[in-house]
Image 1: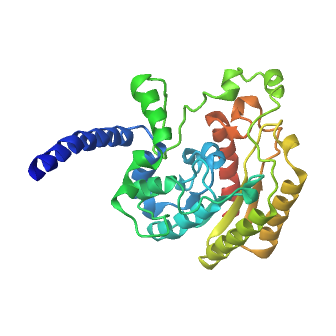
Image 2: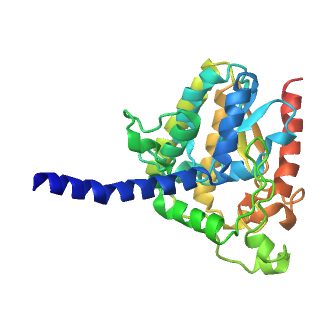
Image 3: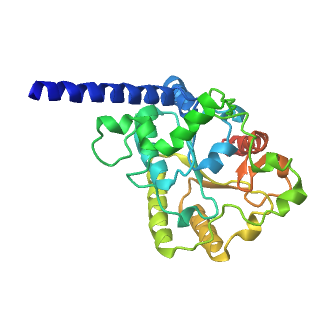
Length: 313
């Protein structure tokens, strides 16, 4: 009786396990920018000189193909300073020639919660970069990509394998050169139509407690980089012209004060601030109000490259 029960249990779970691994395999075969970054990091890590960190704003804005110095962009969606710092400390030993780190200081970056040890992308970092951001011993399931965010990856799997809707143009740096499909493309980059969009994603909730916590870690990160004799460039990524007007003055003032304080306190800190540059960038350079498209990314990165070259002279 017991033997039959065990056989029945095994017979039930084998298809489940096989089915899951089929889903996991399909997930790993999705065209994700992490795959390309992982390969580039492995091949070129010892010669990389410039490292970019940040959220999707930095991810979309910096295409390393347009930087003369060998560079890598490790920014990704919703990635915050705490994840940046963990990546930085664990990956720097693999990047012995890094002399410049680019850090994001976007409008409300200091008043949004950190990612923390339960951030779903910790699995991504572990799987693709070999970095443990869980702040604990890792286990087998921590490397299972699909389980890290089933809802997100289910949509990806459906879109890519079933609907065939996704178009990607990743270069060797993991930058998507074809990422145009979005809000502004849907509106044909028509500035009149774009101006009528009064509601878009922007943080309008001040949080002084989060600000205090975030700035403390930010200065710890700057001190760490100063002790490593690494230059830091603080980035304010360009926003479409309708974005700046909706910023909350209280949040903006605190952010600006921290940026200026960092410049005063640390000799290795430089500023590259283009958040309100509405002359160099217009609708055709943006994916939505707060993210650049590949055309904007090319223009911005070329400008950043000139800035970085000037730093070396």
